Length: 404
Image (tube, rainbow, N blue to C red; front, top):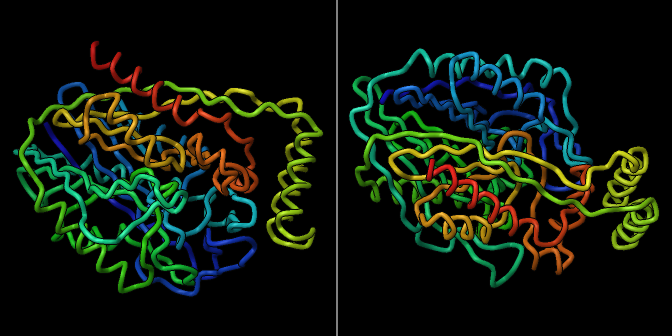
């Protein structure tokens, strides 16, 4: 087995609007707390070559994700996995209505600015002399389920450390949390994922965020973020145990059924959103009306079922799956249970970020993730139970691949 690492800076220029934390805030970047990067690792064993990419961004557009995948294939990679750390102190790449204007000057050349990280990872390929896997609970009140008071919380940090013949060790690791520790700052930052990386003793690190759709930090601010980063890194390093240097990879197909709507349904949803917002001049109402306009323009072309695939690789017998949603903790638990691996890393915000995929109970509560978030993502709500069905589809597809 061989492994390589590369990274490139992708920090936007001062004045770029930062994404997240509410509607039409015009929260423009005034400086840099810590630079934003794309981090890439290439894992190779025999004919299998996997490219793992982590972007210190909220999420990617389809155009950027496709460009990265094409470049990875040109480098001879048989599988490409792309995730974003979901920081809310970085720029918007794909427009989310009201939550950060996309800068065409920044996004136009973004993929090309990312390619050197992929090239560097290929050029850095070195023999792997050992692999360790770690999983342990990060003790303390660091994170909580923001969607349900009694909802599940995955407090484990998971990941790998690869020892290489020359140079630094390579870590691929993560946990699950929204990148919102720093709040409405005007400074660019990778948020907590950057702090975890800084506390890993100088390792080359690709951070892989878990399903964070319902998970927020319990305490926010600079001090809390630094403490969490230190604790998570220490917990991970203290849990490592050797695993066999084996690698395989595949794509797992899925489909998501979307709510069937008429023109009347679309207008009614926007009317109700305006009422909840408190009037037509409120920001949330403006978001809903923009969604209404776009949905009505393409109502005859709206899909009722959306296909997709999830990237997957298995390193040292430990599965790693990446979903293109802000997924919920319960879905990760369901997949782990279905494939029979508590160690499995179930990641979110992969490739083009499609939005939230809430669980059936969250939809029944009429939550932000269930309806309002679909307005800013310019999507239709998923049919209730689709998150759970996704877990079943991916479980079945993974088990079928494992038998091949």
